[in-house]
Image (tube, rainbow, N blue to C red; front, side):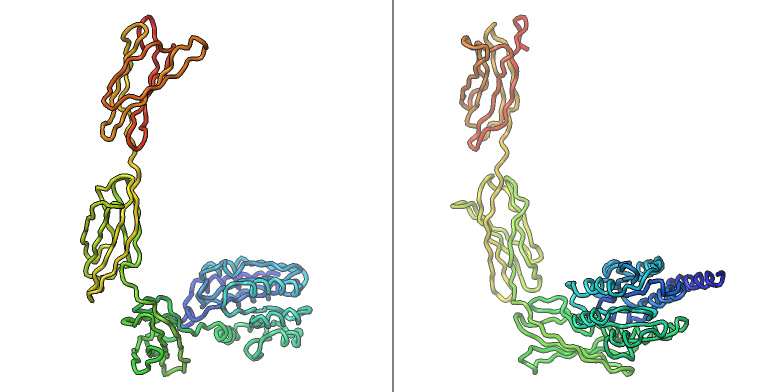
Length: 490
């Protein structure tokens, strides 16, 4: 028993030590894109020692790969009486996270219910939006694998590559039917203590399935394109030969040699709205690589301004922005604006590096017509017009309101207000009502020249309110309570 525990401790020590020494070839780190689901036999037929050796093997097998979307996604599904999804394909985006997760896996024990686990695997690998190669890597002792033929056939029919490793001589015929050809690189039956000898061979088989051998366009404009590829060379192992041309004009071919450590290149001075074909061939004395091809069509030519927008609108100002900036193609911008329908037209001239300006001294609540035009270096001019509205100005409130007692039943109301745009005042107060206990409310509209007025027969504790009235509406007013005490107003 002590020897067994010591063996387990040594295994985990090896795992922890190797986890601190991640040194992977650049050609593997960024080589591939695909999903790998580990189907790990965690049933009672697998000895504890074998289980941890399988985990250690998986750790070393997967260590060199870059993880995450756009690279390699790894999931772990355990086989027991009931399947257990230890972690899903999107759970780990770096090696440190994956290694910690593998170290924390515990064995389920129980029955070998591979069929139930395969149904989960089918859902994980086939019902996904990721259009990438998919691998099911089955790690088992090979003992009583169950009736898996139909489920494995469905997985393979849906494009999943099945690879298997058996640690003892189990049902070889079942394993043989389960895996995807070729058998010599996709099916292994090894002694658990010698499982390390197949690590590189199996990893190479996986790389062949998920190697992302493609040339992609990752950015496109009317005059340029950025191409990206998975690096298969290093600085000292070779170089890349690139050539491209308009698809129907092979005599206009352009060729370039790129360093072995490159993984992207920008093609410039392209013609707008034109279909190009590009090819990239890795050149090396050590290995023969396939030539990668891609076709793309540049965007139609865009002359600035292609878009004009309005923001930060206030009663007296508006910000106008435009784009795209084309420093090499535009000499200057001109902004013209005027109130609709017949306001004066104002003009601003701006440098080519400016893509916004603030129009000031505008009228509140007014619609403006704004035109932005660009003079291009080739003499062409392009203009774009938008409509913009200033916000309504906030109306000034009454500045002051005072009540004073003139006689016993008469008070004087005096006020102050902002005069610009003023058209009058709206005055309200409560008067005594001989026919009801409840007082009546009286109203009066006074001209803008009024600064005070006198009120009589106010109800006890009458509320007196004055509001300024402007051409565009009523401003906020003020109110006071006329409370008489011993002949005085308070």
